[in-house]
Length: 381
Image: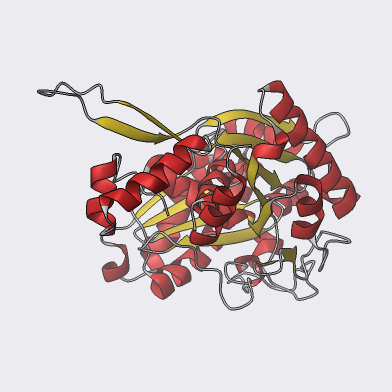
């Protein structure tokens, strides 16, 4: 994987242990194919300035889609992880995988064309889905609220359209990676997304993602809540924390539509308005949901001992009420050893963490041993 620690031929030879002649041949090949660029360093040094190697902006792009319930966010970036463009596609996940994925592909192609990027040079496609994902086979596995998506070959569908490697992962995993990369937060990092359901992603101390044996890690919305009672969940069980404390559950309890035909984010905006105006029922609903979530987070803290917990999703926009109530529950339930250095925060508004995480994961794929092999095989043409 490319780390950026070696930026010239001599340093590559020293770190790799390869002969300078071998490094020179490989670097020349990468320069000829347009994957690398070599220029004089701008640092002030005596004698001849050293030559610095960088990834060429023309080497290719990574494209990302964060598919959610009411809309999808898409982005394209170069191989240095610099975002070139983003867009929002108002396509509902209930339209089914073919319709959603074709809309996403059309949106990505339009972004590529708008920014002058050749679709042939797409090196990696990354897709985030709001449900359990079989990472190896690139498909959702028994997701709730996603009719037609179970087992659908998402990776293969997009591979045919873009003729390149495709990574499919859980959306909260991408969010967790994005939070760790953007804000340089300490790891292990636990990201909890509170949306139509509740999910979690864990970035380990070495920067990797914990996905579990079957991709079901982090599906915490189906843990039984302390005050769960007989509330029916979409999974068929009763008392799940997602049925009580998700953004959708809070809106339903307050009689607020989650979305309208004209505004897919109506529910989030209306709830924020009521909270800003100090409406007692809305304040109570959010704080009660946050307390239920905090109880589950306390269990996860004992299990994984994260250094940072980040709350994400539409409910995180009410950060003061949400974070304070989650903190109160965590510090009441978790032992001091697990919380003495713990940071609990909410994602920044419009952070697009999943897109940043998808770009990071895509770049890792491009510069993995297999990815480098594909890159060398095709060059920058």
